[in-house]
Image (cartoon, rainbow, N blue to C red; front, side):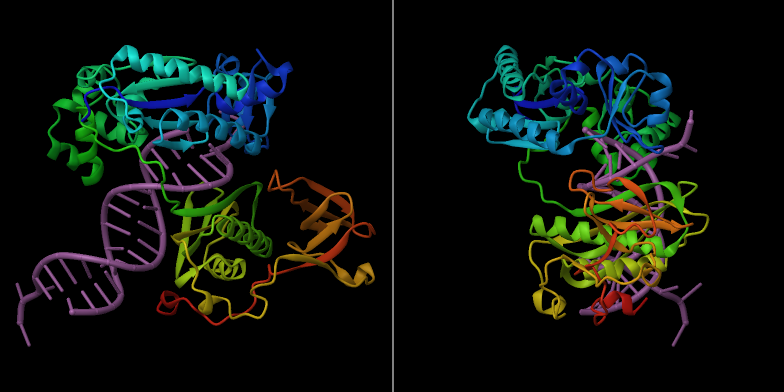
Length: 451
DNA sequence: TCTGGGGTCCTAGGACCC
DNA sequence: TCTGGGGTCCTAGGACCC
């Protein structure tokens, strides 16, 4: 372990809400809640004004509304957050080349990597205050809380102690006593389930944990977790700050406003999710071998089914074909509230010849209008691709009683707005998306064949 | 007023191989 | 003839984080 508090943890205060207040002055000083605004939405971030009313992250938006009805409820604008995040991260990299982002609003910085050594508490505090000032300037007024210590663990916990807009530096050599009086839940990785098990063993504070035998801890919470927690409790943390962490999986999921039972609708949604996963893989120049379909039932039980291909793919049709099969094997039962498609076992290459033998393999996804035909011959089915001159590309969510409900896809808000049209509305045209079809291909995945 | 979406890491059992 | 043992891969589920 290092001898000076040269690991920093920077945490932007109420980040999403702060960006909204920055961009819309009328929201400043007022409660702002950013998150899902639908009936099943949850809160991502509440401004400090909203927190006074008990609004918290991960709370259902419905509960937030009852606690603070007069707050502004906003859907997240991830593009704006990403932009601000990049500017802030750039300020950090100007301070040290070794920066490890944990999310849009959090990062570790290793000051030792910039050649600084023998830093005193006062040195680090001055550096932290300078950084906060440059973050404020470059981001248009965002504040950050900074923690510093001899390890990631200490820096992370310290940054939480004086929010918002604070700086806490823990002197080298005082780590174990710094942690001792705190609840075990301050240690990252100790959530409700672990805390419950620990409390059954009489452990509530880190001091309790420091006295617990390692073997006993491993018996209570398992080998990997127990061993690492035993070390963290005495502040023995030598995990390095790592700047380039590899992506391990890419996934898309959606919780529906009402549970879905219709399998053909689920297939249509899975196809689209496969397309979005594929687009994101391609953008990141990644491909993967394992396709996973996730379903969450009406009672919130969650199931995953996965299948591993012989070689990696980023092809939407391959992903969709596997996803369809996995979905077929999944129970729909009393309705599904969430569906997800993901790809893991990633590689940064693609096994061309194995997967792109299809004649349309290299076709870009494009929209082709079908020849005009009388409406009554067309019909609409769930998942049918359509286009509208005012709203762009969309697809049929449902139809009946002379009306058809269409979900439009926009770049910024992936699920898109839902609109209803008369079934004979001439502005609504049926289209076909080349490339999104899950055409028949030879079965290429080995493990499927011995199921 | 029920519980988002994007991830990471770990566990455990079975298949399979040497 | 009462049956090893280790390693790796795959699948499913769960805890946890922001």
